[in-house]
Amino acid sequence: MTLLLVLGLPAAAISAGLTAYEASMRTVRIQTAERQEVTARVTADVEGDAADGKRQARIRWTGADGVVRTGTTYVESGTSKGAALPVWVDRDGSLTLAPMNELNATTTGWFVGGMAAAGVAAAFLVTKSGMRRILDRRRYAQWDAEWNTVEPQWSARFRR
Image 1 (tube, rainbow, N blue to C red):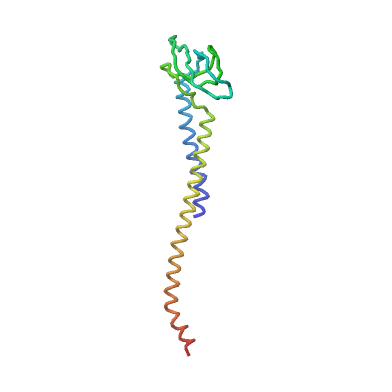
Image 2: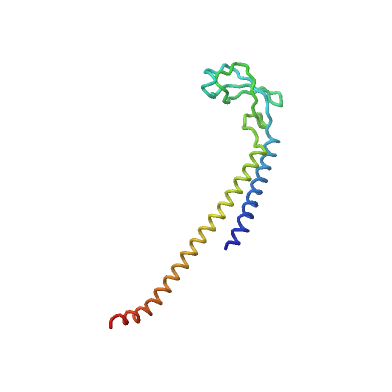
C-alpha cells in the first residue's frame, strides 16, 4: 500500500501538472495569435484623485483595419482626457483581456500537479483508515467469538 503512495503520488502529480501546463500553453499560443495590444486614448477627464482607485472611462482606439472604435475600460482616477493607455483587442477589434502568458501556464501546471498530489495522498489516507477500520472490526469479532468460547471455562474456575 505504501508502494502505491510512493509511486502513485509523483506519477499523478507530474502527469496532471504536465497535462495542465500543456493545455494552458495551447491557450497561451491561441490567445497570443488572436489578440493584440493597441494604444487607446481617454475621451474625457476621469474624476477623482489617484487614491480613489480605478473608474470606468470611455476610450477610443484605431484597430489594425484602420477603423476608429470606442469602448469603456477601467483607468486610474484623475486620468486626464487624451491620456494614452494600452488595451487588448481581439480580431474583431473589440476590447478583451490580455492574453494568458507563460507564467500563468506554469502556475496552472504547478497548482494542478500539487492538487493531484494532495488528492492521491488524501485517497491513500482515507483508504488506509478504511482498511484499518474494516480489519479492526473483523479482529474484534474474532476476539468476541474466542472469548465466548473461553469465558465460561474461566468463570467456572472462580465459582468453586
